Image (cartoon, rainbow, N blue to C red; front, side):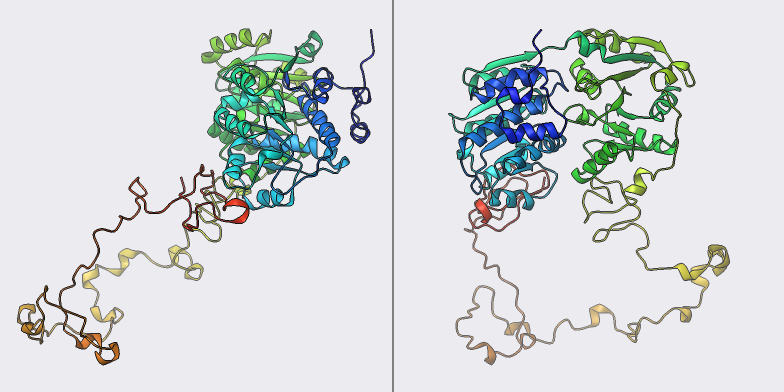
Length: 572
C-alpha cells in the first residue's frame, strides 16, 4: 500500500507548505488529496464530502496557488477571487483558515456579510483585496452600489452550496456568477446536488471534474450515536448532568426561543452556557462563539445556524435537545463532533411523542444508534460523559445584555431603541422618567393617600397659583364683540390683487392689516407627493435591494447611487 502523500507532494508553493507545517498539517485528507491536483490544473471542480472532511483547505490551497502563479496585481474595488458562503459564521471560519496562508504570499483578504456596518467593508474594497469571503445578500448590495467590480475575478468558489439553496440564496448566487468572467475558474463544494444545485453546475461549470469522498467504516466508528428515551419531566435534568461534565458540549434546539430558554435554565442551574441563534446581533454571536471556543463557557446552545460551518476543536458531545425535521440537518448537526479523525458522541433526547419521528431519522441518516431509557443519576451518564460535574455561577443572559432583550445585546434592536430595564443612552427608558425620588423616604413613612381626604374638601387656596388671570367677571361670549374692524373694509375673495401693494417696509405690520380668508394658491397640476404605501413618486430612486439594517450604501465608490437624491432609503 502506497503511503499517503504530503502537501509538498501535491505541488503547492513552498510558503503554503511551510505555513501548513507550522500548524502541524503534513498529510492531506482524502477530499483534499482528490481535488487539489485538478484545481491546481485550472479545471472546474465539483467536490462532495461529508461535513468535517476538510473541504475548506481543499479549495483555499489551490485558489491561493493559482493566484500566486498568475502574478496579477490587486486593484481598488476589483478582487481577484470570490468565495461565497451561506452564513456569517462560516465566512469568518473560512477567513480564519485563509488569512495566515494568504499572508505568506503577501495577499489581502476580507469578509463581507450583513448584520454589521458598510464602512469597513467599503474601505477594504477601496484599499484593494485579493480574496473576498462573502455572503450573497450583502455582496449584491456592494455590487449594486458600485463598490465591487467583478471583471477581475479569476476564481469563484461556492462553499456549502446546498445550504445556500436551502436558505433561498440560489437567485443571488446565479446573479453573482453571471457577472463574473466566463473564462474564470469555478469550484463548487456541496454535500448534495439537489435543490437546484445540479442546474447551477450545468449552467456555470465548464466540464467539471467531480470528486466524491464517502464516509468509510473507520469514520463511522469514531462517532457514536445514542438515543436517550426520557420523560418530559426528566429531560432537563439529564441535559444538565451531561453539560456539567468536563469538555465542550453543543446542544441543538429547534427554535430561537427554545435556545434562549434552555441557555437561561442551564445558567441558573450553574452550567456556564452561551446561546447562538438568529435573534442575536453579529457582535453578540461572535462574542458568544469566542467564549465557547476559548473555554469561558463549555456549553453552546444553538439553533441550526450552528449546524454548518462552525468548527470548534474538541467538541466532546453533540446533543439534539430537539431532534430536527430532516435527516440532512441531523447529519450536519452531528458533524460538529468527530471532525478530522477525532472521536465524538452524539446524543438525541427522545420524548414519548418523538419516538416514531426519530426512528425515521435514524433510518434516513443510515445510523444504528444505541437506545437507552435514561433518568437523572443513571450510570450511563457517567459512562458517556465521565468526570466530576462542576457548577459555578455565571451572569444571566439579561445581566450580560445590560438589562435589555434586543438583538444587539442591549435594550431594543439598536442603541437608539427602547430599553426595557436598564436602558441605554440615546433611547427611551421605561422607569425613572420623572426625575430622582430617592430623597422621599420609605413609602410607609409618607402616609396613605386616604389620609388627605376627598379632593373637593381641600381648600383651593392650598393649591399652587396658576397666575394672575381671572376670567370669572367676563361677559358672556355672545355679548363680546368678535372684531372691531368693519367687515366691509375687507376685499371680496375673488377681487383681491396684491400687485400694487408696494415695498414690504411700507405696508406696516401684519397685525395692522385686515385679515381676510386664506386663498389656496396651490397649483393642482403639480405631481402628488410620494406615498410610502405605494403612490406615484416624483423622484428617481436608485435600484437595489435594501440591506437588513435598513439602508443601502452610498453610490458608486463614494458617490450617491440615487442620481443625486439625498433622501434616505426606506427601512423595512
